[in-house]
Amino acid sequence: MNVYIHDKKMDKTELILFLTATNHISREKAEIIADHFKPKSIARNQFLLTEGQLSDEYFFMRSGFLRAFAYDTDGNDVTTNFYAGNQVVFEVSSFFNRTISKENIQALTDCEGWYITYAQLNMLFHSLQEFREFGRSVLVKGFASLKVRMLSMITETAEERYAHLLQTNPKLFEHVPLKYIASYLGITDSSLSRIRKELTKKQ
Amino acid sequence: MNVYIHDKKMDKTELILFLTATNHISREKAEIIADHFKPKSIARNQFLLTEGQLSDEYFFMRSGFLRAFAYDTDGNDVTTNFYAGNQVVFEVSSFFNRTISKENIQALTDCEGWYITYAQLNMLFHSLQEFREFGRSVLVKGFASLKVRMLSMITETAEERYAHLLQTNPKLFEHVPLKYIASYLGITDSSLSRIRKELTKKQ
DNA sequence: GTGATTTCTTGTCATTTGGCAAGATTAAAG
DNA sequence: CTTTAATCTTGCCAAATGACAAGAAATCAC
Image 1 (cartoon, rainbow over the protein chains, first blue to last red):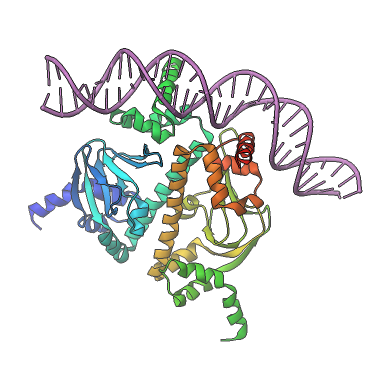
Image 2 (image 1 turned 60 degrees about the vertical axis):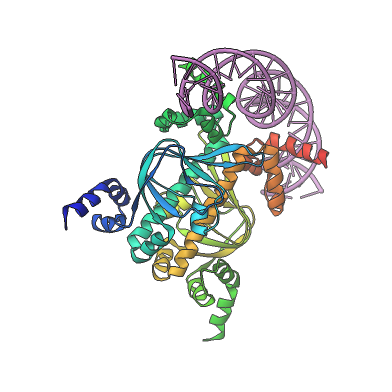
């Protein structure tokens, strides 16, 4: 073992911590897995994924903010999701079904992290059952949070949805234009502006 | 091989067809997998899953209609999903995270199908990589359809959402009280009633 | 720093939706 | 069959939201 390799591994501390966090993966296995990840930087406004392409990178984002968006039938830009640091980012349907993506994923700030390709992921899934558990838990977590969001769309007012987002994800608002947050919440930007006005009145 | 066993296997035709449909699983493997499933019938109004319990059955429904629902903070019953025949039904989060469910799943009509438990599923996942692929595709499909529904909540009017549901799932309306459909669409039952009135005017 | 562009707010008005309650219709229970 | 309960519709009015446009504020590009 030489110093250079050692340093490179140390580099991936956050990735290794993330892999071990769910308790499915031991430290040793996590290091083996992390070795397969390559570093990736995305400059602000650059795309991690563009509509029409295949989502082929399983990207662990260490730092930064990403926005996923699609276009509706009238051609309007609709924010489908935000991603902050310390999570895995990819478009589930395109990635696992090997179909082209209808979604774009764009950097709101400079982003840093590591990725592996679909082929590598499958190879690792095949050889490490611990990593399969991890992969499943990533899927299940994403699924569950989308269900929570759907329930909030049904049961909560726009004002409540906004207040919750502000509460649970305050740092988002430092980097994201409000019009993007508005479409994420399912309202227009002028409605959001009025809601914000109301809320400042109340406090 | 005796006639009794043979007949029992023939019984599971729909299950085997479903397992092979995604092309991950060969006919032979599908029969092996299907052998582990036990038949399950749910009478109308009975529960497949009750709030507070663990979702421990991976239930393939051959025929019938199910409704998943939760209670919001005001205690109102909110329909989170409908399930028609020919699909796998379970509560993702409770099932895979081994936590108690916040959702109920109740039969709208008599239902028939087969199930395996979480332990059996994991055992089969472990030994049959083809079945793992199948399991992943079940998760991915559910995830993708929830994303589509979320996008429609953001971009479409209640009238459009209703019209689409009527178009894509007409049989649902034969078995489901409209108030359940209303909360699934994110509106009140009186709003739905007015929307239906408008639509009959238009045609 | 300055002009251009984007973002955000605000006003006006129309439309959608909700809350509530009463009545009509349908389904369920005995 | 009859009574009871559940479901659905409708009316009224208030509240929330959207569409559109204009102006203010902030940000970006050079």
